[in-house]
Image 1 (cartoon, rainbow, N blue to C red):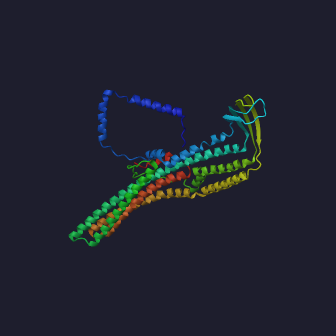
Image 2: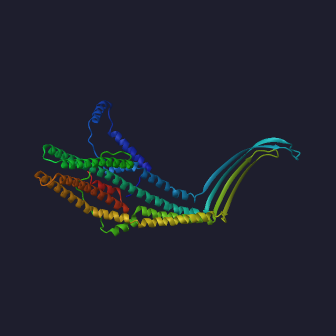
Image 3: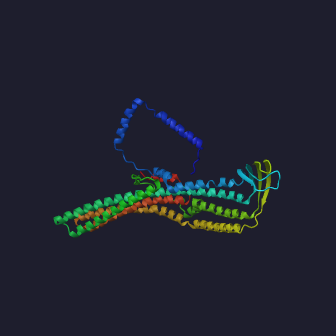
Length: 471
């Protein structure tokens, strides 16, 4: 949602007021400085509790540091000058030129009896003030209309870049959370398998176990170690991915709550979402503006066939020094000219640039059609969100069932009903189910944001809703 911007003067006054109030609130007498410094020193020595960087705090860092978003901002600001550039074509141009010439004149031979051969040097100063005002220029009119579409396109593109930043930040943040969960589960699996391996070795030494059980336990333990190492690498890579967006390595993040509401898409009809995406998707709206820009570019280039009418006014003063043939002169001239220019032939340039613009217009239309046909992303986001609710619930039940299976097989191992290998398999399946369950919850949250982006309604408020599922 767009926020109203304050004038720069009001922002400056507000900031100065805040600084003044802060200064009054924190005035410190000199006699207390030593005591306060000591307390500050002690405070720095005390261990500070670790606090996870929240999703919203991470997004704030991303808005300030993400190069892709900052580049989009700069591009939008650059495109925003298009109207000023186009408006300049309607306004008069005022120019002042001055020249100063040093002349050395030598008369080699003269038939004038009054002046014989000789050399003289004199200066000439020429000053001109000229004004040009366009009365009719077809290309300027078309460029101004085109500039409006350029600015609108830049606005939609910037809003799309902001939504893209929100989605990328949330995705990178959730990837870090998922990687941290995977590492925690891998470490827990490795510890649990290690205890089973110790038990198998102890039984083998006491003569109650077999070498096969020890080998099975060792194989499972080594596989668990490998998964833990892989999980560590993925977590490091996920943190680097988040650093690319925020510009800072974030070590501590929030964690996902055990319970949070799972909401179905509303309305529960995929075609409604597709229709909304066709109307509101920001990239699609930017493509529509791009088509208008390309269409008006054809008209602007075709304007090269039209005549132009300008009025020119000039004031000139020419101060020439004396010469061998007479005294100098100081002449002032003012003239007004109405100039009609009718293009007849420019080597085929106008025809060529108009044809180029027409082809680019056709390309923009095809790009728009391609974007319109890309409703698969909207459908996929909708279906993923819809099925994600059922998937989370199913995997939750899977974890419960796998835990019960492991407990039963562990009891069976104690009573001799089960061998060691089924217990190891049950433990592996339990941690695999836990990883799938955790990942399904992160996927559900991400797909909710992806669906909002597809229909062009993704906003910071949606990140607030996602952060409510974190702690």
